[in-house]
Structure formats: structure tokens, C-alpha cells
Image (tube, rainbow, N blue to C red; front, side, top):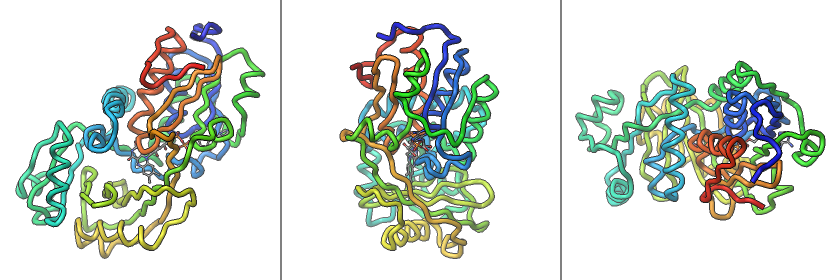
Amino acid sequence: MLQTTKRPDSPVSIIGAGIAGAWQALLFAQAGHAVTLHERGDEAMTDATSHWAGGMLAPYCEAEVAEPIISRLGLRSLHIWRRELPDTPFNGSLVVAHPRERNDFERFARMTEDHRRLDAAGLAELEPSLEGRFRDALFFPAEGHVEPRRVLPQLHERIRAAGGTIKFCSDVSATDLAKDSDGIVIDCRGLGARDEKPELRGVKGEMILIETDEVQLARPVRLIHPRWPLYVIPRADNLFMLGATSIEAEDTGVSVRSALELLGAAYTVHPAFGEARIVEFGSGLRPAFPDNLPRIGIHGRKISVNGLYRHGFLLAPALAELTLAYVERGQIDNEVMQCR
Ligand SMILES: Cc1cc2nc3c(=O)[nH]c(=O)nc-3n(C[C@H](O)[C@H](O)[C@H](O)COP(=O)(O)OP(=O)(O)OC[C@H]3O[C@@H](n4cnc5c(N)ncnc54)[C@H](O)[C@@H]3O)c2cc1C
């Protein structure tokens, strides 16, 4: 267990201002620690995987494919998002399918909990733009979503308001920081931490941003698809994010095939998406350990939080809460923490 500091005013250096580091910095700063958050990129955060994410807070939908620990941490995170950012939209999520994917749709319903089945009229009531588009849908009322490119700056602002310091364009090493101070260093570098964690890999997720005022949605719509969970997420200013592929590759291009699938999926959700303007193609590399599970590594005064894979926005608040409980009270979560 960590013996060096339990004082609330002790210095805490956090490396990486993506979603993992931002939540760590916020909870530690609010608890009274002297937090400095180092980020090697600038405030635009385009180097962070978090910049490219969908931002869905969907522990129930993710339970179809993810381990139970993702649901456990995810449910805790929903509570923290609501507590810290009460404006976070919790309008639920919808899952729809075309007739040829009927069996997969029924399987999704069996594998997941806390949903209601809507008929076509119920779906139209919830999302008028989808009237007549699908025979039925699954509605997960407790889920939320955030807009990563808005919520990251919002979190950074909250960190400053809580007394933390953020240093952009500050490329630092956890070992050097630990040598230079007697405080805690929390390494949230995502894929940038491969120098110390060579088992990390990047899983490519491609996305497309489109713009139209012909369709209005209040919540993410997932379309059952044989290979990937494809979805359309509403953003401010008539924008929609189409995501996301999941490919074992580490280049950051977007292939023609992926673009066709993402755009095709949107078009089948609503033909008006066919007239939408393409604003951006992009992709990010999800940092993943071989088992695709998140990990808090404890190495003396150095703590690493990584492997958030496809659930960074869903898990980051709960992981920060666990890290804080460890530093302040020595509390260990055996499922997530590894001590060396
Ligand atoms: C297309 C796509 C869709 C996704 N959709 C969702 C979703 O809907 N819901 C969800 O929960 N998750 C989603 N994810 C997953 C989520 O984006 C990741 O799990 C998350 O972004 C990982 O966050 P992170 O903070 O660990 O890493 P990052 O966001 O990559 O942040 C790490 C930061 O560390 C910085 N850094 C690295 N080295 C140094 C250094 N030496 N000094 C200082 N700074 C350094 C980097 O510049 C970077 O900003 C999606 C991912 C993709 C690609």
C-alpha cells in the first residue's frame, strides 16, 4: 500500500489530459490535492483518442459484448457524471435493426437488461424523425451521451476551478516526475504509455461527421450490424457522428470500405442522411490491453490508469474515484488494480 502520502494537499502530477486524465485531475483537485495535469498536445486535443470518440455512456448496451466489470464501473460512472456535470444528457439510447438482422436484434435484447421494447408508434413518439422507419426498437432509458469535443474543455475548466493547473504542450515522463517530486504521479497517457507497457495495442475506430437539418434525434441510435455496432449520435449544430469500426490496425486512415459501411448505415436509418454534408472523416486508436479490460497499476508512487479500450468515457469517472480511494484510504479494488 502507498505509505508516502495521504495528505489532501500533497502534490499529484497527472500525465495526459484525455478523458482518463481529466477525470483523475478533477476528482483529485476537488479532494484538495495540489494537481498539475500535463498534456503534450495543445488545447485542441486532436492527438488524444478521446477527441475521436462517440461519447456514449451506455453500460447496458455494452453488456452485450463486454465483461461484467464494465457494467459495474459504468453504472458507477453514470452516477458521477450526473453528480459532477448535471447537464449531461441522459435521454437513453435506441437500438434498431433491419429485418435481415432480426435474429441478432433478438439476441441483443436477450443479452442486455434495463430496456423497454417500443413498437413503431412508440419509436415515433420518442424520435419523430424515425416514424415509419423501423417495426420496433429497444429503448435503454438510463443511458446518456456526451460530446467529447465539448466535454473535455468543460472538464479542463472544472479542474482549474477546483484549483488544479493544466500545462498543455508539456511532454513529460512519469519516471522523471516521480524523481523530481515527493508526490504521486498518475500516468494516463493512453497509447503513449507503450514505452512502459509494451502489451498495449491500438484498436482503430473510424468515424464520420455529417451535417443536416433534415433529421432530428435526441439520443444515440444503434443499428444492429453483423460486424460492428454502428451508431448515429446527435451533436449540437445539426451535426451527427457516425461510428464506429473496430479494427486491429494502428494506422489512422479511413478506408473506402469503412466509409461506405458507416454512410450506408446512416442512410438506412434515415434516407435524409443521404443528402447530408460530410464534415469530417477521422479515426482514433483505442488503447487496449490483451484482455481489453481497464487497469489501475500501482508501482510505488507511480500509478497508471490505462486500457480503457472502447469505454473511456463510460469508465473514466469510476476509475478516478477508485484511484482517489486508494491514495487517500489505501482501498484496493482487486478486479481493476494491480500492485507491483
Ligand atoms: C471512434 C471511437 C469511438 C469511441 N466511442 C466511445 C464511446 O462512445 N464511449 C466510450 O466510453 N468510449 C468510446 N471510445 C473509446 C475512448 O475514446 C477511449 O477509451 C478513450 O479516449 C481513452 O482515453 P485515454 O484518456 O486513456 O487516452 P487519450 O484520450 O489518448 O489521452 C491520452 C493523452 O495523453 C497524452 N500524452 C501521451 N504521452 C504524453 C506525455 N509523455 N506527456 C504528456 N501527455 C502525454 C496524449 O497527447 C493524449 O492527449 C471510442 C473510441 C473511438 C476511437
